[in-house]
Image (cartoon, rainbow, N blue to C red; front, top):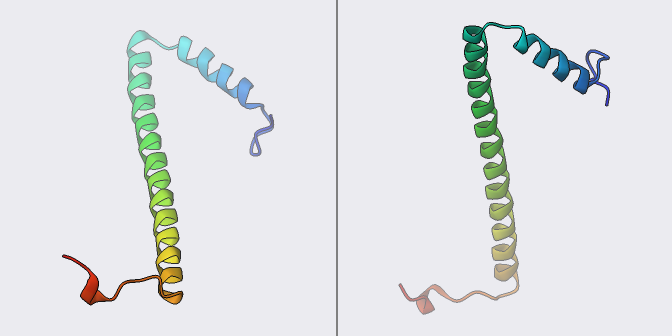
Length: 84
């Protein structure tokens, strides 16, 4: 699989990153882990928000279409017949 920007494969880039991480001191590796953890958590959070937003948008769109269809075909009840 080619990386569009660099020409290196993603596997090669990952291996280079692993090699670099292994060459760091323990303190540097811990700092790297903290930074990576923050990046992963942020990315995961953003992906979840995007997925949730898509689901909410899809539900709203479908709900509106169904309600509109019911209104246009007379499949609704008059307000006086609704029980609150």
